[in-house]
Length: 381
Image (cartoon, rainbow, N blue to C red; front, side, top):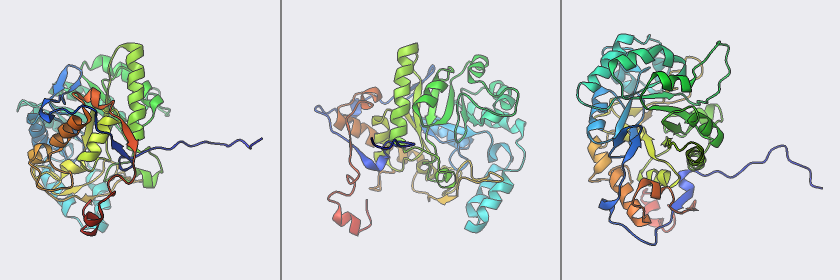
């Protein structure tokens, strides 16, 4: 008899290792429907801007809403610690590489001011925009009343890894089912990467799940902790949980792929893997309107003892509108994301996002380099 193994591993896949198969029927890209629904809200594009200080401030959130998407404001970031947030963000963006982590730790040691939480939310709401805000699980109970009073539309409870069950020394932690009862608005919870964790969170009554641990361009969780699952596999597993929960409850919970998307090809593959929407950070940090001024850093970077992020230089490429809707002035897939999604759906014969989730995928790790000899010579992908 063969000696049994202590553990068995399965093969998991990232965006670079898969490709989409064209459909038997093609569709005019203008005819596909890319609406994204969350609770009683509907957005004309399935893209969320990440709750990172270099990506979203109140003016960016307003612009994103006007363009048909959703931006999430980090309520534990620079905007709620400093009245002059732009000055602090500029200091971070311009700091030397060897000084930026201690600077971030110092900047984020400033206490959060609850009056600024209300002010930032009202600034967004006063301009007719949908307002989504992000808090960590440990601060949710503390800040929830202030956010409700200020009029938020969506609450995102987010940490590196979030589960429905948590063991700690506190007598009673955050219970999402109870939170959902006292906050009659859509609640998104993340992040997770597995079928069982996603299913347990859905059973708590939340409206959406963020999935992805460590794939972000500015995140170093995988290097520091060794924790994470490649995004294609993580999306497929969490989408399977969504389908199981729909069968058992009749309620649909949105699955949102968060992180690891560096171009429009990755974005299209996320939907084919089962996502209802995607959350973008580094791509949108390149917008002229982004508050990071061409820099981007992870939410876990300022941790006082164990930073799990790094500041990266993404540069400033074009306006947010051009990144989302074009026309593209570059060939790398970082502009006209919506045009690319519509075109891919048309090629694959998918009229809706739900049909895109059923598109055939193949394992193809050399797909992007096959036949690209001259592009490789010139440094193109």
